[in-house]
Length: 255
Image (cartoon, rainbow, N blue to C red):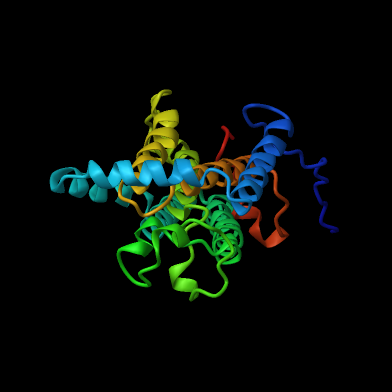
C-alpha cells in the first residue's frame, strides 16, 4: 500500500504588533540613522552629560542595587532558562517545535549583536578610568579600529538587545508550558515579562557607566527588530521531516 502524504498549504508569517513591515523598517532606519549620526560626532554631548551625571550620583548602595538588577540582562543565563523551558515544553507536548525557538534566537543574536559591536568599535564610558585608560574625549567616537577588540565593544548594548530578545522568547514559551500544567498565564504578565526587565537593564547599564546612553538606545532598537523577526516565525506551521510526525504538535496555539 502506498503511503499518502499530507500537502501543507503555504506557510504564512505570524502576526505581530504593530502589524505590517513599516515598523520594522522604522526600527532599522532609526538604528542606521543613529549609527551614522554618532559616526559624524552627533549626540556626544548628550552621552557625556548622562555619563557625568551618573558618575556624580552613584552612591555605593545605589551602585550595588544597579549591579544586581543588571544581571537581568545576562545573555548566558537567559539562554539557559529559555532552553530549559523549551525542553520541558517539548517533553510535555511530545513536540520538537519548541526547541526551534531558543536555537533561532541564539543564532540571530550571535550573528547580529556581536558583529555589530566589533564593526562599530566603540569604547565604553569606563574606558577612561580603567584599561586602556583613554582620554575622556577619545571614549566617545565609533570605529576605533586601532584599539584591541576587548576594549571597543560598547555599541550597541548587548545587555539591552539580549534582554528584549530572550524575555520575548521566555514569554512565548512560558504560556504554553503553564497550559500543559492546567494553568493559565495572566494576561498582564506577558507584557510585564517583555517590558520590565529590558527597561531595568537599559537604565542600569547606562547608570553604571557600562554603556553610553546611545549604546542602550541602539540596543533597544536592535532588540525590538530581532524580537519582531522571531515572533513573525510561524513555529506551528514550519514543515518537518516525515520522521518527526510523532513529535509534530503545535505549541503556540491550541491543538
